[in-house]
Length: 257
DNA sequence: CTGGGGAGGGGGCCC
DNA sequence: GGGGCCCCCTCCCCA
Image 1 (tube, rainbow, N blue to C red):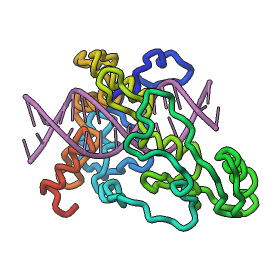
Image 2: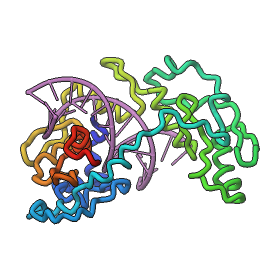
Image 3: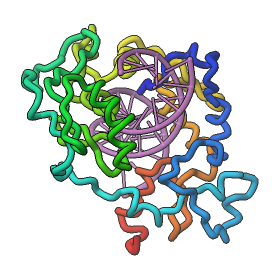
Image 4: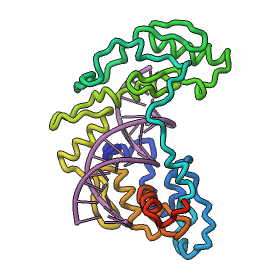
């Protein structure tokens, strides 16, 4: 859905690279996430790549195990991180924040640095402390020492900003005036509203089909590509989506994987 | 069963 | 520091 409504964005300084949507057939430019290293498929299947630059970019299902590594439902309660849950006296998560009001700052009462035990009355103060002083002096790597833990799900973050962003997924402060559905971010709501208005700003240059969400258009564009992005290493079949490839393997084509 | 669309979520970057 | 926006991912449902 619409993570991308603001069409005006097209003209913003931030280059959207929408041309890549079309050239998605050349995923090399498609911004493939690093965690999915492009398969250096020994495409002896050059037939696959015939006339399509994407062949070499077809993803290797051999990566799937890593990609589908189940994440623990609940992060192990690390000893170090400050557990804000014990510090916050908010309302229950059920009804909390279910308003259309802009997200309010987390009602945190006390912030304590896990590294030096200094206490701060404000999150910003703690954040500044950790960024400027504590982390520096003690060579504490933020990545290895998450300091902010979500009170709702025990997820941990190294920055307050990230935690706040995450918490919004629990509080869902953005509510649809039409149906009352709540969302964590304004743009998610805007995209949802499109489902009510039927607005579809993203159209496919190949078939003129329109989508309300750029991500969905991107996925759709894959269907126009002969060689899809995700390839089964066993049967060389390609799929437009990772999920399809996964289904394919799970269903037994490639039992070895 | 497969392919594809709809919808929603998370993290990161930029302003 | 916060908000806006983008990209990528995933789940669900339907043909």
